[in-house]
Each structure stands twice: as C-alpha cells, then as structure tokens.
Figure 1 (cartoon, rainbow, N blue to C red):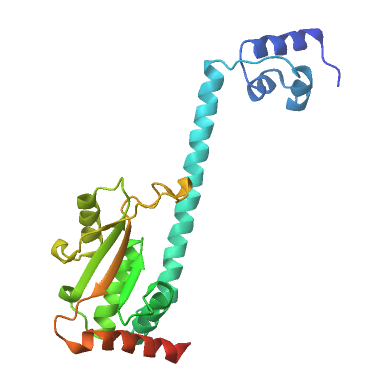
Figure 2 (cartoon, rainbow, N blue to C red):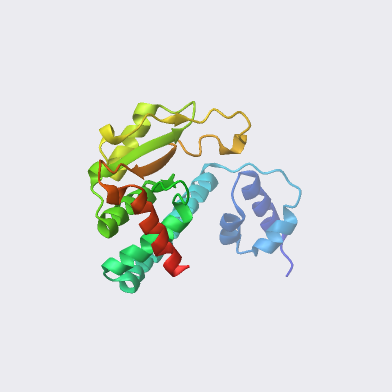
Length: 221
C-alpha cells in the first residue's frame, strides 16, 4: 500500500521527537513493519513519553510474572500437602536415613551430619530426636567458616536457625586454603555446620548409635 509524503513526513517527525513504533503506528495507522523499513539505520533517542511507556510495560510484565510465579508456588504447596500428608515414625526414619546416606559421617564411629543449609541440619536433628531418642543437650555443632566470616555472627545465625543453644557450639574451624576457586567466594557467608552427638556417658549414644544408624542403612541399600 502506497503512503503519501504527508504521512511519511508525520511519521519521521514523530520518530525524531522520540516516539516509539507502537505510538507512531497508532497515530497514523501504519504497520510497524513499514515503520521499521522507513526508520532503518536512523539514530533514535526515546523521549519522556516513550520512556514512561517502557517503564510501565516492564512494571506490568514484572507484576504478571510475579502473579504467575505465585500461583505456581501456591499450586505446588497444595499438591505437596496432598502428596505428603502426615509423616509416620517410619516415614521420618526413612527420610532421615536418606539424608544420612548423602550427608552423614560413615567412618570412625562418629554420628555426624554436614550441610550448609540450616533446613537440612534442622531436619537431621529432628530425625535424631524422633528416631533415636536424642535430646538437644546431646547435640554439638562445629562451624567451618572462612577468613572473612565473623564467627560470632555465624554462630548466632546457626543457633537461631537450628534452635541449638550457643553454648553447645565448638570453636569454629576457619578454612584458610589459598587454592579455592574465586567463584566460590562469598557463596557460604555463614559457613557449613557439622553436627555431632555427645553421649554424655550414655553408651547407646556413642559408637553404638553410629553402628545402629549404619545397620539401618544397610537394611535399605
């Protein structure tokens, strides 16, 4: 379709004033593909109206994406509630054994769980309590932190996250290796927690506990 010089002039005038393809196409009723061909190679600086339109579009897009994400998370939560239901004592035992297979100590007769995620450590302590009768007072924590970490803050963080009293934390170990990848720096601002069991004189909570756990694991592997 041919366009008059008057229409072309108006289109170029609007473009030079900083208006977007959408705005110009709406004003003079011309396809954006035609405008793209006309304005090819011409420098462009957006005006206030165009910048405001872009900002509003991005805001609307962000709000829409958030809504979609929220609905998806909500659906997943409801589905998880339906799938999982209530955990039985055996469910907790099996869940904990799976955790220990991946994150637990297998040698030296020491019951130990290591992870950088407080939720995993908290699950581990819950499992030890529910499945093996461990009390909070028997649990000890040692943090592995980095030179730029503040030990006091790290201990407070892990104590609050796991509900294990600060007085049951050992002195932290600082990782001073110089050959670590730069890309790993600051990835673990609060370090890694290693929880272990202090038997406090109860033989069933010493080496035997570790043997008991390993025997349970051997039954399922």
